[in-house]
Image (tube, rainbow, N blue to C red):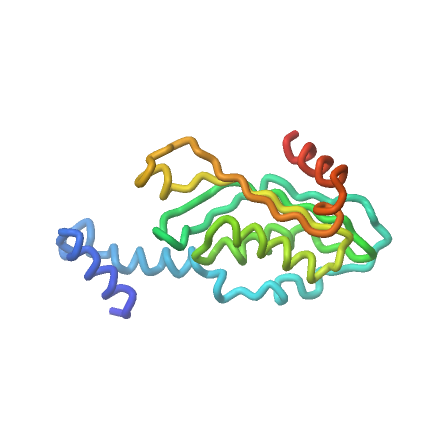
Length: 183
């Protein structure tokens, strides 16, 4: 039995359960496997994901990938938060393969996170990699740490944004992005 399995088994004992009970015998292995999957972003490198997917193109209009499913674990309680990410950029001679944007979201979401950092990491990585005219990222998520415990507000959605370049300096660009993700 590996160290993580032993730790989960001990956790079951600490909460008052019998880890040898039929329904729990394989739980340490399942939880370990699940946590390794949910935190697999630590083993992913954004530069590797984006490598070979940046192309030179004379495009200077906004590109948006919206409604990207986001699933992450809050670093404070290790409970899930989930929702949608909306990512936009204005190219300045370089574009990225569209499938790489959800992959970039996944790299950072599959780590212990706070939504604010997650939003900024996606935006700053895209901004540094593409050097576009601007980047905008908005994430809307429901946090189970707020819904299941603490304040127990089941329908509270947290919205975070990170705006860089034209999205930060030009009110019209930011408004265009925000209006397009609401449709």
